[in-house]
Image 1 (tube, rainbow, N blue to C red):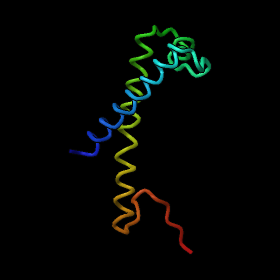
Image 2: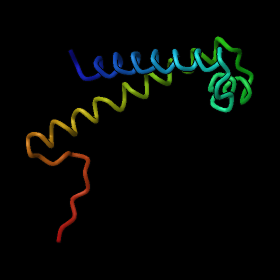
Image 3: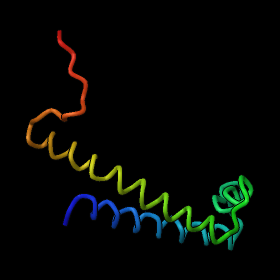
Length: 91
């Protein structure tokens, strides 16, 4: 399985877990100040389903972009190599 696919799966799982907590929060109104869907609908002209779609798109895309780079960094450190995008200072 490629790193990009692993990132998408991880992003989907994390987004589903966060969505469950968000639904629980809106059902109990435990912390109304942390209601992302309400924030998204208040910020623009989004409907509630569009705000949920944005939540899933951002969750999967952000994790898809960040997980492969984190895995590459960890693999480079494990092999004792420097990451190709790190800053090398001479001194």
